[in-house]
Length: 337
View (cartoon, one colour):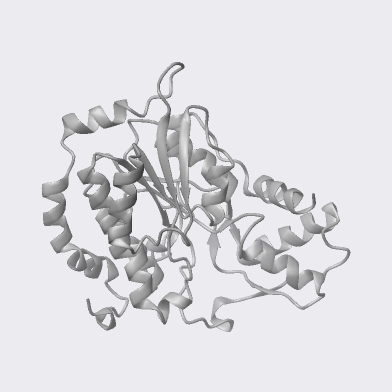
């Protein structure tokens, strides 16, 4: 695999070419429609039904921990954090699936460093592209349902209204390219679901909320970009949707889920300050200063607008996303306990 050939203008075309050989393998490993229905029938959670055996990969991360904290009734979960199983470990994936025998795998593992991915391309692609391809193939061969988490960075940000699930993908950084490669790999599994989301945060781990609180608590000047718009999304809120969608047999393909609304990094930073002061997490804090993307050069190009359309996902499950300010307040209250 030659990663230096990826220059950015046509990443979707590149990803398709990179994974062309895997598509032929998928045709041999695809779950037939009849078998798919047999598999999905096992995922019912009616009273008296046997427990659904689920495997959560990346269980030590923000989304993984949120999934473990919100396991629905009738689900028996085996959590596997990165230190136990690296998704890029092909033999490890095969062994775990055979040993644990899940009916459902939720992949919350991934390489998430948008900036680092520009310098660690092989590692990013090994996890987000090749690792996901092998996981999907292994699940397909065993007729195991797969739910995989992807990102708004598969889009170029040139839209002026929320992206639908069928919108053209054209990432402008290598992180987005590697995640798109994973999506294309999962597309070969008939019982799989890809869920795109954006700007995940929680009360655990490294994220924008924790970083902003730390800087503000130290009375350091905070600059935040005002011209990059997306939806901040609480890992807890995403986890609730993931469980509902994972256990619904009709939902396959690609879906979008974020908290409701949209915000720039600057608006998000202002909200963190306001809520942090109100809850007593901050005694005082300087007000963030808005800056333009051009004034804050980064290794990775960032899309300017990646709000995702979630209406379809909400209607089919009769489950509305919470406003992003509500999700933020809940996370800050966790930190305040």
